[in-house]
Each structure stands twice: as structure tokens, then as C-alpha cells.
Length: 556
Ligand SMILES: Nc1ncnc2c1ncn2[C@@H]1O[C@H](COP(=O)(O)OP(=O)(O)OP(=O)(O)O)[C@@H](O)[C@H]1O
Image (tube, rainbow, N blue to C red):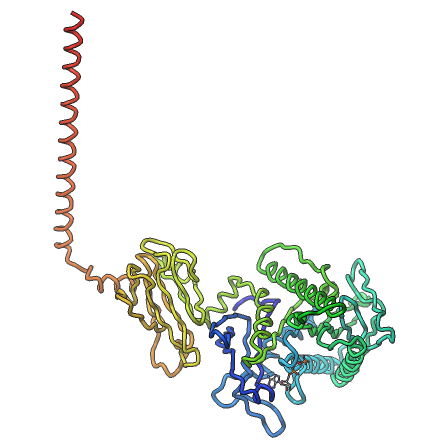
């Protein structure tokens, strides 16, 4: 099983809203396994993003009489439960173990952040499911006679232009903000922030409503929209108990829920004064957060980088709940409509750098993403190289291509695999050469002329004379309707197939005749060269003797 990752990024596409429907919008995104593909409505250009999870919630749902949304038969629509299982259960486990978690929601206004994080009514999101599970767990422990004392506390603040405001205890002075202090052991904290004890999810809901109300008032006072601030909801879970020696011990865990201001909103054209400052502050803290998460992801992958927590108020306040055993989850919410293309692109781009493809992630991705893997004479080395294939063109060559393969007879721009028809059950993969001299074989047979060869799962492809790969199409492989038992190709079977197509399986007799002929030719050439050398030597000797004789005669 793959190692549990502490940083996870998910993207979720919501259904069309009434405005998008009224405008007759087209869909600009598709999802395939963990990938999200976004199509530029003007140019048709496709941009490919791979996340830990890509959740399709655009269409294919059925609303039950009670409003509960379930997938229609045969669709892959993502349920709230699935999102919780993937992202929320780790948060819950972490809380019981005394570790922290941070859940970020990111995306333009109305993109579905609240839907995933909080949910609507019966369609509960991560926070209510987490809270219910937490309070349920506490009740169970109490009923089982546990002596542990459990406390749950709630706080809510916002960061606006690098200033902190308490949303549960707002001050009438709009300029006044709370101070951030640094404690040698506890790290950064907000001085005087109100924390409220809660014992049910209903109590949390009530506090959230109050905070949101105060947030709206504050935003109105500042003449700003609420989405230009970052909001942090903090749920602290404390388990106090006595150890055998009778001393009191406490396990404390913070779960932060962060609603980020969107970077795209900072690009307000011609912004001046407060608007300009506000935009700069949003950009600064978003890039600081991006850098922190990227550094954490790299460190998790084995690197030792300094994590720049001090660069913004947001990252200072989240320091305790990021890194180490903490879980970090980013949910990027996107609209499916082509009219929102540029905001969607900016949201996906923000999530993407945090997803450095580490080896374990590639290993996860290759289970679900079409790819080419290598076959090697040494069976242990087969499958060690894997090239993931993206939707659209995947160019292959020895320099400057999407996939770089070096070796004899590899050309700079050798061939390409075009992945299209993503909506079809298996998609379509066509292999084409980019040069008539590019030696490319599919299942032993060379491609000739301009023909494109359709690739199927487990096809063997040889580029040049040594680069031998197997094509993997996970959707075809996993399709129960394809009545095939897939046989794993081996290096030997692939080489034999090439040999038999090339007619190299010629008799040994013919082979030795060819060798004999070659040896005779070489001998003749060498003999001629030796004779030529001897002739030259003889001439040199003669001329030297003549010169010597002439010199002796003149000397007398
Ligand atoms: N997965 C989904 N399934 C069904 N409806 C959804 C889904 N996601 C979002 N919606 C609907 O889209 C609308 C906007 O979603 P939501 O309020 O979650 O956006 P938001 O990003 O939180 O907005 P804001 O930034 O304004 O707070 C809501 O009416 C919600 O019901």
C-alpha cells in the first residue's frame, strides 16, 4: 500500500448554476482518474492537471425526496461521503491521536467551497461529518466509562490586509486588530482571541453563523467583499487524563478550516488605494502559503528545506497545524462553465505546484493514468521507468519533447502519442511518427509512411533500436466488458515478436554463409592494405639508398 501522504490536493467541479444555464454555457473541464483537463473555449487548447483526487460532481446526480444527492446509475459522480472518506477520516484520526490538521478551501465565489467543506443541509460536508464523528466518539468513550475529560473549543478569525480580526468578538473600531505573539513553546498565537466551548455540532454551526454574520458586517464597514479576506475557523480538541502516577496529562489537537481569498480577485484592473493594498496582501499571503506547502511537500519527499512560515500572517498562524504529523488538505472548487475558464485556470494553477510528482505519487498515478513502462533484459529493471500520458499530444524524442528517450536511432522529434476521445469508455490513443526515418515498431511491426497506429492496452512499442515500452490503458484494462485475460508482456516475448516480424529468424546456415563472406572481404581489404604499405616502404628504402650513394660519391 502507498505511504499515507500528509499533503493532499483535491479538485471538485460543481453543477452549472442558474446563471450559467441561462447563458447556455458549455463545459470546459473533464476528469479522468486523478486528472482534470481544462479546455480553453477560444483556442480549444487543453491543459492537464493531476491532483490527488479529481471529483466530478457536475452532472449525473439524482436528488432524493429528502434532498439528498446520490449518483444516477452508471455515473461516476462523486458523493459527499466519498470526499469525507478520502480527506476527512485522516483528519479525525489525527485529532484523536493529538495531531493537527488544516483544510483549505480555494476557488472563486460560488464555486462550491462551502458545499465540500460545510455542505448544505442533508448533504453534509467534511466539517459536520468530522464533528459528528468526533462528538459520537466522545459519547462512546464516556458511555464506556472513560475517565478522560474531553473538551472541544471553537474560534473564528479573519485576516484582512495582513491584520487579524476576531469574528466571535468583533471590535467596533474597524482599524483595530489583534496582535500576533510568539510563545517559545506554543509558537504563534493571537492575543485575546475568543474561544468558545462547544459540545455538539449544532453549537459549532451556531458559532459559525455568528462569525459569518460578523464577517459580513465587517466587510460592509470596510467597503469590501467578504471573499477578499482569509477566514480561519479553529476547532481545538483536548483530551485530559491522569497517568498511573496520578499526574494530569493532556493531548491537544487543532483542526483549522481555512477559506482562502481567491488570487484572481486581486487582479482588479485599475485598483488603487485600499483595493490595491488589499490585492497585494492577498497575493503575498497566498504565495507565502504556496511556498510553505511546497516546502512541506518536498520535505515529506525526503528533502530538507527551510519552511518559510514567517512570510505572512496566514502562514504564521497556521504554523502549528502544518508540517510534522499534521495533515494538510486543499480543496480547489471549480465551475464547469466555459465563461469561468480564466478563474478556473487560476484556481487549478494555484493547486498544481503543491503537487510535485514524487515517486510514490507517480506509482499511485500510474494505476489510473494511461502510461508507457519500460521492458528491460534484466526483468528486475522492467517497469522501473514510467511515462504518464496526458490528454492531447505527447511528443517523444531525444531532446525537448514531453517524453525524452535516448538511445541508438532515437531522433530529436521521433514520434507522438495523441490521447483523444476522453469521453469514450477507453479513450483513443494513436501513435504517429514525426519523421519518416524514425524507427518505431508496434507489436514487432514497423510503422511506415504517415500512418497512425491505434494503441491498445498492453501493446509493445519500440522506439529506435533499444527503447522498448508497454502501453497501459487503465480504463481498457479494468473494463469488465472486455473479455480478455491480460498477459503481461515480457522482454523476451517482445524481442521474439520483433525478430519474427523482421524475418531475422533465418537459418543458422544462411547466417554462417553471410559471416564467411564478410570475413573473406575483410581479409582481402587487409591484404591489399598490407601490400600497399610494403610497396611504399620499398620505395622509401630505394630512394634513401640512392641519396646515400650520391652523397658518398660527391664526398669523394
Ligand atoms: N457538488 C455540488 N453538488 C450540488 N450543488 C453544488 C455542489 N457544489 C456547489 N453546489 C451549489 O453551488 C452553489 C455555490 O456553492 P457554494 O456556496 O458551496 O460556493 P462557495 O465557493 O462556498 O461560494 P462563496 O465563495 O460565495 O462562499 C450552491 O448553491 C450549492 O448548492
